[in-house]
Image (cartoon, rainbow, N blue to C red; front, side, top):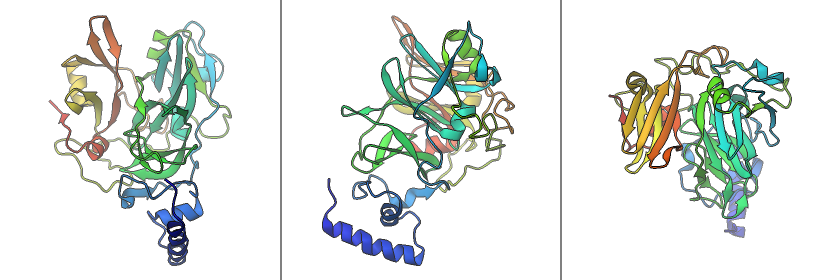
Length: 340
């Protein structure tokens, strides 16, 4: 929908007033005048008061558009990739015989990788403030989109934008919340958050993402030390906290036939395996928390999670998210979190 001339005039006048009085917080008028002239702010599915600045401006956290990979040699990383430790968390995706790993020691500094895996356009995303590692197909209504970071947060979660229409998308849900795509939803693609060692074991000739410019960021350093420690609180979050569980406790979130459901990581770790309907959720040790110590590899062991659907043809991976309890509750307030 095109904005009317009256709306544009109103934007200009109200924006000038807002800038002059300093009322630029959560103000689409100011956003359009100063940074987002191509976004259709008439269309939105959320209250703009829910949007907060995370600090950086548009693409201040730069996405990766031309990812560089190194291929493993019989399960051994060479070159820059040899710096990754076996316990480091990586987001892993495979399409056909094309398997790729995206280390969180890189993703933490970029949050989005626009890639094509096995011929399928995908966007690989990671929001450290929610520990949400999600992979989406980036074709919407026949158009391949590529994504950047708005610098904005909602419920402490990354708000992305597509460069084609500059609509804003919620990373946690994959839903467009502002702009011409409002109401559209990206398709989740099955991926794992696992240790680098497990990826190398599963795909000994797979490829691993490495920095195109190693000096651009302090790759391997965790800029959020102690963020997920017991008693910590989420950053820039003012919503309701979940009952019966610490807000920074990790939970395994899965879309089930009953709707979104989550299991606490502590519950899963103690059980080793949980079967819910035709889903099997498993845990094994060996993955570091990316948000604990000063270095990603130095984080405490939080383990590896696998979620698979049990079928007659055998188990198959399904999308899941190992996120924080507060984030799951913020976006799924009516959905259960099982703790025992």
